[in-house]
Amino acid sequence: IDTAGTRSFPKQWQSISLRDVTFGYGEGKILKRLNFTIRRGERIGVVGLSGAGKSTLFKLLLKEYENYTGKILIDETPLRQIKLASFIERTAVVMQETEVFNFSLKENITIANNRKARDAKLLEQTLKIAHVTDFVGRMPQGIETLIGEKGVKLSGGEKQRVGIARAVFKQPELLLLDEATSHLDSESEQKIQDSLHQVFKSVTAVVIAHRLSTIREMDRILVLEGGKIIEEGSFDELLKKKGRFAQLWQTQQF
Ligand code: ADP
Image 1 (cartoon, rainbow, N blue to C red):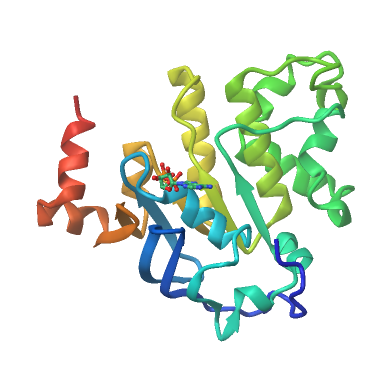
Image 2: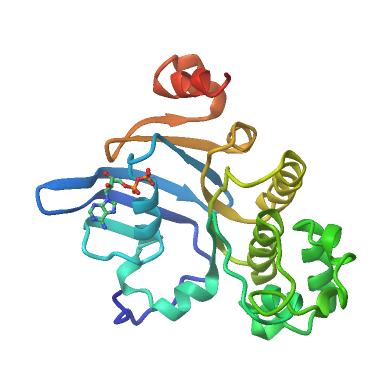
């Protein structure tokens, strides 16, 4: 990871753009000449079959890989020039598996935003939005209950809600989310779905979307295949096109 950047994440940023971004190892390129812009406040869904390059695209946006060609710009500032610490401070990531630590439930949620760790109101709002309130009542010491390996074990759905809560509490500029599809019963899934819709109202989000109901909410959907964007548009636009997205949609209708 390149930590040599010296600039801060721009305060009043308006867009994040990829310009001719190509990335890959050796002969095989994983991402090929990607061009797109994320406007502030937009919710972008990224869809595509396994191996299409979705996770790799995320890693580029997260500054995990910097040996790409082309440009990733936040307004006019190259992402590479932004200090990693500043970048991390302004972004939040929710992956399919949320790691919980051997701390209290509260600490697990406030961990990414130390400056606001004592903000009881923000914490209360966060617990509601992420539907943590639904299971905190069952915990022996409520929000102060020790969780993780040495404490109370959480189910997959509960852990995911902790992950969402952690991201909400952070109040990020940019949220990157890889939706989980497995290990969730339909009740937890519905709750997580509700949480996410709440979260999306207030952030810029790029979501690897697996669930059809989430995809509908997106302002724009990028369809990746073989490392290229093969289609782009709103849910309705893409369905009308009767292209790859429409096909993917059909196959998921079982
Ligand atoms: P998706 O998230 O859409 O399933 P990925 O971004 O994980 O796709 O992978 C895209 C392609 O890049 C796949 O063919 C995968 O095998 C390849 N790939 C991913 N990571 C690496 C890596 N570290 N080294 C070599 N190939 C990789």
